Image 1: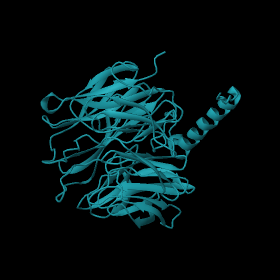
Image 2 (image 1 turned 135 degrees about the vertical axis):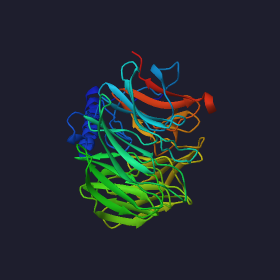
Image 3 (image 1 turned 30 degrees about the vertical axis):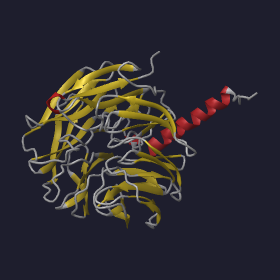
Image 4 (image 1 turned 90 degrees about the vertical axis):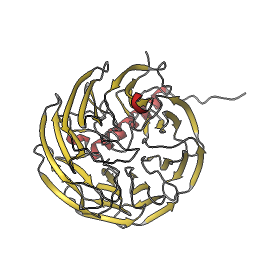
Length: 434
């Protein structure tokens, strides 16, 4: 007869409390503590969430999701975009683009019921003649400091940054750079990054390329860091790595770190490839990156300033980011193979054939990783370095490029149904039914 291990409730409560405090501390270290109007438990204020690495903590959210399972509401999203939802307070925000009318817009939805509250058109005309088939004219996600919304759009041969208030009124707009790719006309993708009093924006193509920081209140330039003139699409991210804040970015055949307060280089090393799209991840003093085009490489770098490469392999997560937890890196490659690698030395713990292609990035919430492929299949599995543990395989829509936002015990997901002229985008909200 098998025995069940009985753990006292007080021990469980203590462990949960400790984990929550660790997530909150991580959020504070990564910058959310600088914004008193944001709540690390109930908000998902920017790309990859409060800690910027796809971790939602101990959220009590469902694993079985469909139009019949744990659906709170779903609402039509006008026009088209691949930006992921962000959530602040009682509102959900998205960007979208009407390719026929050539307009860019910011959308606000009511968090409780999904009603479209406002649809603010912020630019008209000037769309590029070409874009990558997997990109859109509204791919960068919104970022919020709790008072303003920050968006970036590519039009009229430039990248423009725009700040709005929560009623949709434009506070400022600033031309970030001239932007007109010639070699690869694949559009623009990096999401804006908020750090302390700045919003940081990457603009990289086969021309004058750089990362820049603008003042959140005025839009005026604070610093600029030049980058190699190569088109690449990764969003910069700030993490607390090796005991200090580092701005991490891959692409242009480098993996690099900058001081986010002034843009000065900290370290760089040869790695990944010409173009990457995924956002870098980190744990302790190790940073991880993957890409891309034209070759495939995933690698780990000692982020203590040495730039020492700890390991490399020939797998790639090109458009999607990865996730690291408990010392192990999980990557769902372009062709739909899930890998688990040990973070310190790259040892392959296991791999599991799923289905690709993949563009969305994962979220860890409530002890499960949520990860969708482009076909609308949302896999939910446990992060277990010993074996692949599938919990649910959900089908939501017919295409899925954006990543979920998980906060306040809710899951928000943007998907599409149909194709061609009949394609429709939807915003879903899921939660455990009481």
